[in-house]
Amino acid sequence: MIFWEIAKRNVKIHMLRSFLAMLGIVIGVVAISTMGILGNSMVLAVSDSLKSVGDSVIVTPHVGGSGGVFGGGGGSAANLKISEQQFQQIKRTSAPNVAIPILQTSDRMKFGVGKDDIVAAIYGINPDDVPDLLKLQEGGYSRGDSGCLVGSQFAVDNNVKVGSRISIGTDGNLGTLRVTGIIEERGMAFDVSTDSAIVVTKNWFDAAYNRDDYDKVVVKVNDLDSLETVKTSIEKQMNKRDKIVDVMDTRKTMETIFQTFGQITTFVSAIGGISMIVAGVSILNIMMMSVTERIKEIGIMRSIGSQRKEVMGMFLYEALILGVVGSFIGGAMSLLGGYAISSLMLKTTKYLFVPSSLVSIVYGVSFGIVICLICGIYPAWRAAHLSPIDALRHE
Amino acid sequence: MDCLLEKGQEVSGHMDDQPVMLFRDVSKVYPLPAGDVVALDGVSFRVDRGEFISIMGPSGSGKSTLLNLMGCLDTPTGGDIFISGCRTKEMSDVDLTNLRRDRIGFIFQYFNLFPLLNIIENVTFPMMLKSQKAVNPERGKEVLRSVQLEEKLFTHTPTELSGGQQQRVAIARALINDPDILLCDEPTGNLDSKTGTGIMELMTELNRKGTTIIMVTHDPHIAEYSARTIRIADGRIVE
Image 1 (cartoon, rainbow over the protein chains, first blue to last red):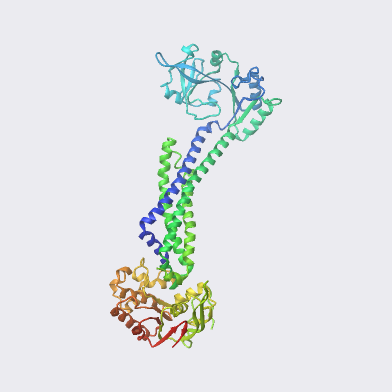
Image 2: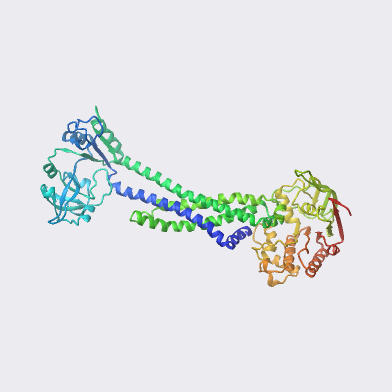
């Protein structure tokens, strides 16, 4: 149709002005889409990090209560422990799911002569339970008390390999352990964060630190739908009279985390949306300029038989061209922006080409087009409702 | 006779037995804060098919108001206007626009071509408005030939043409939908005398072939080309 052709030619003839208007839209789309991609990538990254613990119920001593139930009434969180008897209660309650008692501390350790001591976390776990909790990237699980596992980051940071020896305690006074395996990267975890830690057998830990109790119990739940039930059963059983344990359902916690990430993504995208609104105002301004410049032309069109809706359509086409071209360029640039920002902030781009990330671009492009059309409506309406006589007289 | 049109409906066919334009006691008053201004006061006249009429009068006499009313760009305060049998007073904006598109051809002093369109597109523009689709350019070329525009100029843009050539294109555009009336506002006002003469000879030729022409002009020499002159002063027809 001729009005579409006129709109196209008008955009083309005012190339610089059109380009500047589109630039605003491009920036707006890039801002919204890139923020959406980043937010989604972060959610996916965190999800990947946490998914290995999404099937657990974690039982820890209650902090902040009356004290005295665990550890003899010290009141300090550090003194709160879970006794063997209480662990057995938890185990019975959560059966047939596996309940894994965890011991935890940190200590000095050394690798070979002449090297500096470091301080790292040490987990004590029964060797039979370790395969339920941890996967290895290299080596094997330790069977004897003289072996240990190390986290992947720990291995990289300290140049530790399978077969390396680690002396534990000040000057190695607690003994030397041989590394039998390197644990797969687990990222952030609610149960045990082993990436920069070592895992020893429970027997060795008990002997070295003179312990007969536990820091926490991890219940690995087979049927994810029963997570809530297991959590409630443990709470009921253990906190009958006083609250003596805190029970955390990791999936629920993850859901809360994801929800929070989602809100952050929405908020950040909304900030990107402000730049789109500014771009929309620029489109409005340019469209008003276009109408003002072409009042005489509008008058001629109306006088020779153009309907109001046709004049309105011509200006909306113009806004649509600016919106579609600007938004699609912005969409393409969002991919580049998403790639760059993912590489820089997340050190990976594997979350970029997934539907939930790409949909951010679709949202950004759609928002750009809709904003352009909305901002084109008033100028177009104004053009269409000019009096033909006044428009013809306009110089 | 009323000619009440449905939206988008074409104006009904020619009726040779009735005037192509009829003004009956038409008045136009502009209400202003300082007091009403009477631009036209009880104007009545008729234009029959095939007439060539000049409208003359001093500045402020009401010529432009009269032209706007004849072109359905404005509505009268009182009285009735009939164009091609249609009473314009109660027509909607859509119907008035259709009437302008189908029954009236406009020729302006400053040509008023669309600079973004080439000559063929300018000429066929009203045709496209009428058919609502792409049109065969042959009809445009045919009309352009009839106004004696060189064929090599058909794909040029208006700014590449002289004033006389632009006015020929404007005449072709006005004729493209085969209107009942050509309304001309100082058609030679922006042309040198030689080119103006050429344009007037073309319009005389069009009138000879049956086109009804109403022309507003200040120039008595130009008015001489018409068969009848309506003189207007202070909003009234004086002669």
